[in-house]
Length: 332
Image (cartoon, rainbow, N blue to C red; front, side):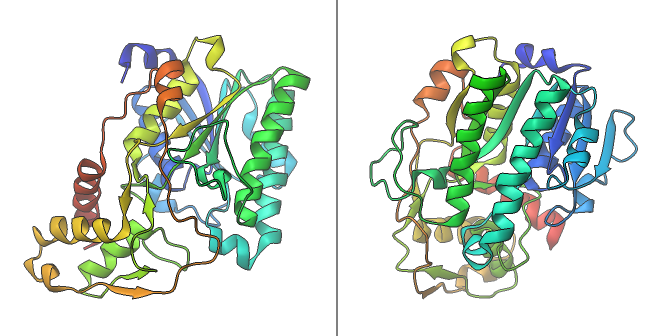
């Protein structure tokens, strides 16, 4: 990572929406290390207060408890802010299928509120969490930013609409935006609990409890699993790039490699067995495929490398070792 470039964030005031969440709290931590003034906006619907516990006494950290569905909360949060990292959203394809209305309210209406508030406050740059789900039914591999298919879930629709709104706000109002299409992010602070827990922390907890993880389908579905530190790098590059050609674009935020679910469980069992040999004996079960899931996901990161100078440091194996180490130390 270009640490010299990131020194530009020293003393800058940066709003992180959804800052109590998995990705948001990791961004808070990194930006505080860089001596930024960090404002976190969260309603704690899915974010966790314990994710912020280490920052609460930091004079450069401010927590605003509010909701992006409330325009006044958004306006309060962006007051005096240089940059916005918009992470707040209701994630999960199954959640959006079960409750499309709430997903729409948070992910589209909330996103629009944040854009309006940022525009009115004169924010310099608006970087937002987009999603690989935008590729929809496109079967092309690897996924290239300007080739997408039809969305396969309400969640995917909401994240695509975010990209359309960001583009319109740049063209109409002149605000600079960058969208980061996250591909299956994992790592420290990712919540293993709840109905919509991501696959890696969920499987880790089940292995640690000597319970059999259940793979949806035959396990051949594959994903571009992306460790959190690669995502942090992309966000910092998006905030600090001086390349005008890089602005007002969307970028795959991934590694450029894929792992299927059978391989994933084998790696997790291997790394966890180093802490508890009994885990090596835990069997994996199979269930039905999940509605709205795409079979394969693999990103091209060429655009991010070319325009932003992206250089992902963590492959799946390195990231899983770090994640397993964190879960064992914090949740066992």
